[in-house]
Length: 306
Image 1 (cartoon, rainbow, N blue to C red):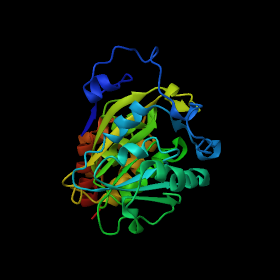
Image 2 (image 1 turned 180 degrees about the vertical axis):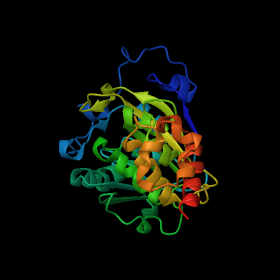
Image 3 (image 1 turned 30 degrees about the vertical axis):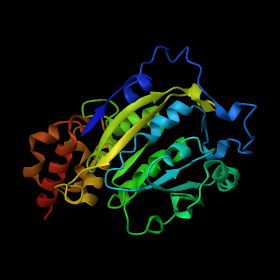
Image 4 (image 1 turned 135 degrees about the vertical axis):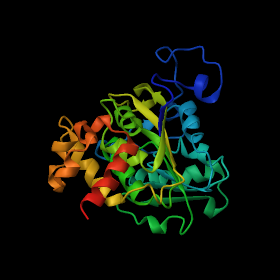
């Protein structure tokens, strides 16, 4: 299931239930990193890491509030940067691991940030210098569930999602900020042009909600596009969705590699029986099938190939 809650930039008005009298074009965003009276954190955004540091306290607070804390008490933040979101997560009754590749960020978070936040219990907040895509998930909060959140680097955001899917048994919730186009693709419903591989594979296991849009002006440096914040909550039946998981991946990827063709033509490589190839569902194009349609089709293909 997917829900798109808002398509325009929204802040306290809709997400937090507060009155918002200013439009996003007129609003003066709070940028603590650029204030001369704040301590220099010594952390600069690096292009090769895809970094755009969040510079608006209100947006950071709202992203922190996307965490429902239902079914977990541990959180992994990917790409904490200068800790703007981190401090709002730390206000919650959770244990937090902040993971980053940026050594400047690691040094700041382990140093003056911990002092400013008055972190007294080591288990409350850990900082790890690592690449999430290469780091063993089993070492994070061993044998206990945890949520993932963050202001994700654009260049690896979809890879982060796919690794989350690989470890969904440990991750009941996933929230955070993506390039808007990517967030919309993850949450898209069938029949839309943005519905694709990412939409189906995520929504087979998670309920996806597009929460709100964030303009470039709240970042340092500002990106060239809008960002989008979403939430994924794992489905109760994630262990048994109704078809073979690996077969589903094959069907979905093969279908959308030729999205302009009918499913009958896209799935030729499976060597389906002549009888099965007459199925009415194969007359459709992949974006016309719902997530459940893909699950049912995959199950039927598995039976046909036996």
